[in-house]
Image 1 (cartoon, one colour):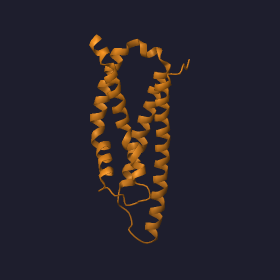
Image 2: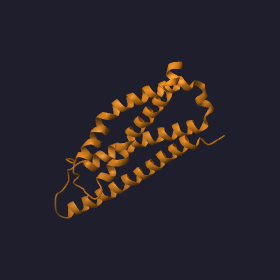
Image 3: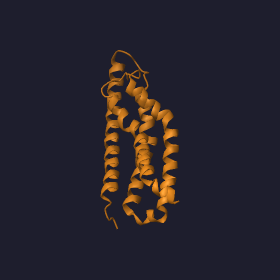
Image 4: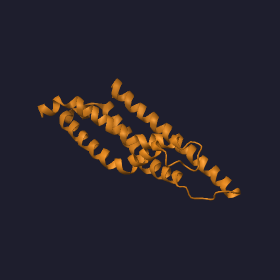
Length: 161
């Protein structure tokens, strides 16, 4: 346990990096699709974010779980004495749920290239796509604000109760 306590700064830094990496695709992808119904899935950034969202989630999630368990072993019951940490963990759980349940499926629909190519039906489809893309960006703004709240809680460590 003492050896693990000495590694705590490294474990914490790795944990934060992995936690942010898990959210990056859901936060950034809606902005890469801005104004384009026919998403450029061939773009390097979009392809990388899509791969990270599809395949990297398991790898990053496993690393996040491992570093989270290591931090729990080091902190032990002291974690329950830190209300700001519990609040940050709750906010993070909500953000992850939104990313997985709302953002991920809706982003897949945005990237789907099917639909009419021309005519009035295409114009209506373009309008629906723009509305859907705008909603996804608003969700990303809310998620980014929540991540900012987590950063505030972690850096200021306010006395909540």
